[in-house]
Length: 323
Ligand SMILES: [Zn+2]
Image (cartoon, rainbow, N blue to C red; front, side):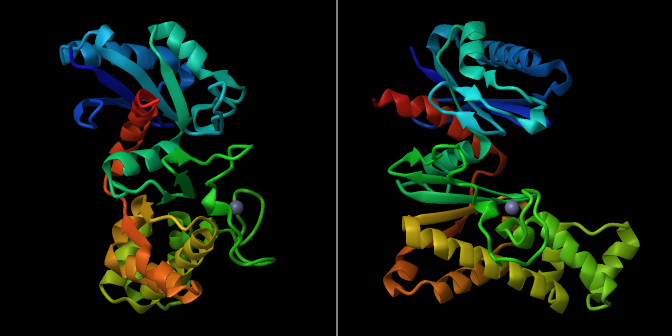
């Protein structure tokens, strides 16, 4: 009887779910809107019904399920499996997720936060394959991260381990950050930062291409700035220079502390491609004093996109099989 793992990635807008073999092959996947208004119990019931339907549709029985791995957007007490808070799910109080979901399903449950499961997913099946030590940096609306050493996620005593977006880049100066400080990595490299700089370039009259985008669409998106940079717009290129500079600088700090084999960069901004990655690598090389570290450290785009989370959630269950 083939065994199967259920990987679940719970986001503020959608619940993604996949059936994954212990060998890492995805057999089926599905996605439904997150019923945020129904509260924690409604969301957990939704996960249960989605799972039952998916198993039935693909001819699996519950007896074949090894366990359910779940990723949620918020800090977690790893030992107890309690989600301390999940702002995007409107969970303001701690939710004992492992306890509740295993009660509902009668199956083993494991949980970690969304950034960590994305990192585990890339390690298992994506750009990090073959590496036991890697750092995932997700550059989207904000900047998140997941640190894996010897195959284990490093969360720290408060679950803040891997909050790469809030490394200070410019002490005492720089744009305001959502965390209440200024000059964090996120304030220079997130999609939000890229949009801010793009709008500034239009206001300053330095980017004819972005001015045209704004005039035609009424809006500037991060991908417009990245597109303009690829098309040779000088102001947009200067923005990508800045993003690459600060990402490379932050990666150099992390490399000195952790010296992982791979840095994997995901999120919408990573789609900029070589124009961004060449700048990240140049900045990294500039701030690393050891040439052998520069040579041995790979800085790569993430491979799994939106599937990283369900793979990593599945890995939470798969990794327990070896113990
Ligand atoms: Zn911050």
